[in-house]
Length: 320
Image 1 (cartoon, rainbow, N blue to C red):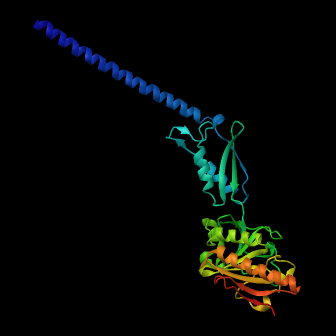
Image 2: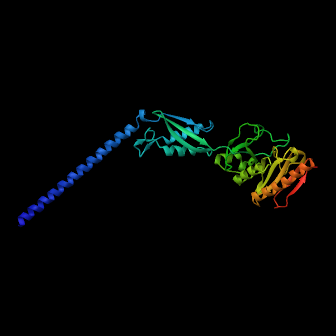
């Protein structure tokens, strides 16, 4: 029995070694096959006929279009894992391109990609919609009304959050709400710097927008707010003598002289020490009362200022 056992043990070792060699050969062959396949696919992915060769932009302003195109081209450069071309029309990095394009400017709200033929790519960009105009100057009363934006230097579009988007083009009329922020004229907090950073230089901007809308809905036609330091604000509206409870609002500064102010302009002081809604309620109540008085007397009711910062006690001064 012993010789038979030794023979069996010897044959078993030879069988095990054979299986190990066969497994090793199989593994090496598999690795080689995978390597050849990857190499072939890598070369195939880089074929010019399968690469994105053109980029078309949609919905983007010309001033940032070159930067957007460069960002997209950069995202298409190189290879995945050093093997597969990122510019391949089948496996191009959609998410990476969208992130790179959106990072170009805070003005960009959303980005979408679409194939353009067999080798083209359309990049559709949606910018944040303008919601107001922010100027880094004091409002000008000299003509008795706010000048067109084309006559103002340093006016910028802002979105719904108060983020400065871009310089405002020339336009007339009161298409957008207007805010005057003289502090933006300072080099340390310039509008241009805020625009490049995507900052919102007007505090409580959303609340101010709601206040602005509510003022108009109440029948007081206001269209200019001066933003001062320390949470102080000045709203400008047409006086009751301009024909109704509302009118076309114009801007002014608390520091400007009386001679600069049109008789049609009422300066309404408010701040953030009290809720905007409470101050609005007091303003509307006062305004309606004075509207009724103006209707009964048929006389002019014009104010230099109305101050609603002190609760139900509304202080005012009438024009002489």
